[in-house]
Amino acid sequence: MITFEVNDMTCGHCASTITKALRATDKDAKVAIDLASHRVQVEPVSADAQELAEAIKEAGYTPVAVMADSSAAPSKRAGSCCGGCH
Image 1 (tube, one colour):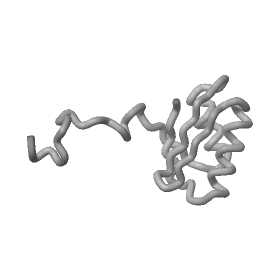
Image 2: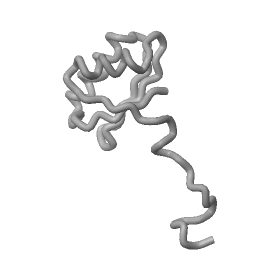
Image 3: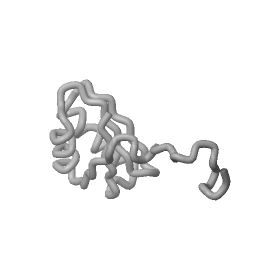
Image 4: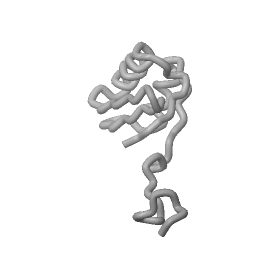
């Protein structure tokens, strides 16, 4: 799974444009878009991350690659709600 943050994606039209651009690059890719977090997740079949980023750029947007699992990194203090308790 490849994840991009696209902060200039602000509406459904933007999401549709990006989805079409990605599918034009990799017709069998699975694309999931979360407008609220400006995230685009792609499970490619034939394209690599660079090709997908270029497709988003050519559609007029600014993709920033997101490191794997960076948004869901678990806390090292399992069972701790805020880091202050044990």
